[in-house]
Length: 306
Length: 280
Image (cartoon, rainbow over all chains, first blue to last red; front, top):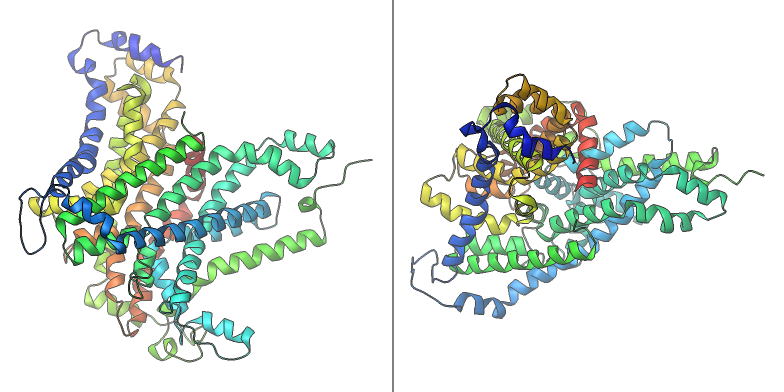
């Protein structure tokens, strides 16, 4: 980075001393990005903050000041808090499974294995599929009569099985989590594989010669080495899980009833099916606030702040 | 005495076991994709056969022909336009912003952090105010509305990734180009963009796949004209399961381009994933 100062300070004088467009060049090239982010990121936020203090619904465009009415309603809205609980449950179950399974797979493929490249190419496939298509695919797989999952379970059970995976209350969560794990474990696997192959071999080999066991080497040397990458992978996946929408929309649409409604599904239903305009704006603000707190906490906690 | 080799590196039965595990895992992850593809080639009788049949008698394309005849297949074209154009714009704007951040330290660390923090925004919280705004502008169900949104959503990622790649470009190249009489803009177009080629591809794959696979934004902001394939797939959902063939065929039409892109650019993809994680 020592070079940067050359062009930043001296570079401008290098070719065009005082040339007007040159002086503003650094702002000209970053301005479109800033403008676009303000337009899409900041402006709607301010706008909807205003809306959240009004009385607007689909039927009446009542723009009078409502005070904190909508925000007070947040605390009385049992369906909202249940949707947050559903989101937390899905995240708390799926994230550790994806991490552990991804780590095991990365260990499996870390050492030489014939045809490794082919395996890895095939394993990428679930992750690049659209989540809505992944959900649709599993919907077909889970079908009680014409899907192969009940058929396979039936082989092991020795009798036909007709489980209603996307309808039965005790089966919907396993169904959603299975689909989620299927799609995103390969993502975790790829990142961890890349991180593991970057671990300094001489360190682990030296520990081996000193007689350290596999588990001890993993905890004391490998894990600290891959932690920065692993933490970011966890953060990315954790955030994605908290805003999960597509897979559930394809599998259950939040049903049966509101049993699998996550915060994203709930917000969508409020805003675009019931058109509670002002109230949805307040919900959106709650979501943004919560995510900001979680992300800030996670970044501090994981020591990612640079 | 040489130390015993660790379990996973020993040849023989352990390698065979690892191989079996690798095969089993790959089968688990591939099977749903296989099932999706195979349904799209089945006849209605085969789709609704009990017990399910695992491969069709013959490959037939009637399910696809229907999609092209009804015009449903055009939604794939919409996805291509939206994802393609927004990727190109995001790459250009994001790389320019990254260049400004790296070489001029524009706005200090604060601006860089602000840009990446935009990535954390939950789409569901953004999409509602955006919808109100687009209704006001009359931008709902328009190409440019979604292109602007996809571009803005990819920009933080592109800027962040390209920062890393631009730091790797030797600054002497830019300095000598300036000495040779290039303007700053020419340096950007003729030195920085070509030199960051690998990074541009790696980042573009992800940007493209993100926009291509999006569902929520398209669901909210399209009506009839610019429906993407992801929204079209959900149009076949219903109480009855008689649209299975269409769900499968439409999904395959939307998935094949991604598989193709990823397969051709695979070495960039793996690099992109690991770089993104390493550089954060």
